[in-house]
Length: 387
Image (cartoon, helix red, strand yellow):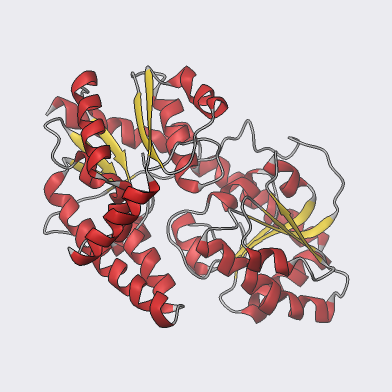
């Protein structure tokens, strides 16, 4: 992994953590992570019950920066350079020789250079289409940053294409993301969706007052979440406030950028920062809104909110991977006017809000358990080993 899968404040960590938990019921898991941040003993202990062994390699940020420059002049992905120094490759290879795994399963193209030449059967999880994510960010950027993202988009697209030559099998989170990957002829990517922990995210999980009308949750340093939060406050909420002036909004999630903290200067907007138990953010609000404009993959925040039996409003970009029915299991809008209309309708109509919440709750229970989500991955890993 390119990050240690705990705490669960990022989607890639959440996916890996629950895959490890499920697979550990029938297999021995050896976890190797490169990390640019310090991993606390508490985080390691959270994974220890599910892993035979855990190794964490702390990246040297100076070497990472040097590697980024090297990759720029070598026409290679910048983020792949960040995560894959010559030292990290040596350490990983030594660990691989020690473990002698039946199969190597690595997450994201960021770690591809570490394992691409491994002699063992190997499977890579794209997770989502990073090139598509980068392209969407590029289209909304300007100046030098636009140029850098355009370069990275091209390099990621090339790396995704080359993955078919290096790996015995490939997985991805949704059909929409699979279609965005440049497939080689006859190339196949196995769909391995995310799930939601129904024992943890349930309507009666926590009991707190309904202090907010609307909540949006997510890591608030992640560009798609920053974009969505700003769009919600700056474009959508003024239309809502024109009809319901007292409507309140909670932006909850780790590591808010300065631009997010500034949104809290509006007296009807609360920016919480890190929340020890994210369920309290959901439970303290009447409606969940995720106006995603960029990004890729399946939005775990929507799964969690629906599991908490909240009515949800989102965009087509987020709903296509989810596969919910607009007007039944949630509401979809792709412009500020439509999103505001849905928000006002749900806040003003208790019967409609309850119907959407109940239908969405049934939808995720029927389609997104972690045990069902991991089953196709386990079958694929077994098939690769038995070849």
